[in-house]
Amino acid sequence: MVYAVKDSDDFKAQLTSAGDKLVVVDFFATWCGPCKMIAPKLEELAQQYAEKIVVLKVDVDDCESIAMEYDVASMPTFLFIKNSVKLEQFAGANAARLAETIVKHL
Image (cartoon, rainbow, N blue to C red; front, side, top):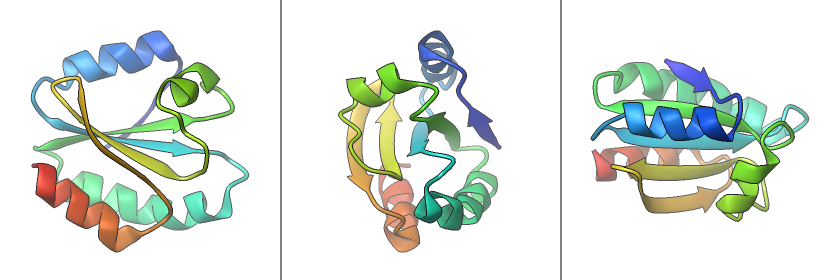
């Protein structure tokens, strides 16, 4: 399941409730073409690894403070967090890299 983050407090609550699961954060914008292209792949990965990962979508226009906190400059940017610790981050709609990075941090 992919969860749409509402605000900074919601984001923090989701990180806490994830426990020791890998959290994949997708920073996106509704007007971003590449974000729309990779969304189905992210949904597929969320279902494939449903027991092991939590996928959060953060709209950079609605949640600017979260995007600024993680220095998000381009979309999509994927952030990987486990136990509230940032493991990795990359920008770009690269489905293969997204899948590889998830597997690497499981």
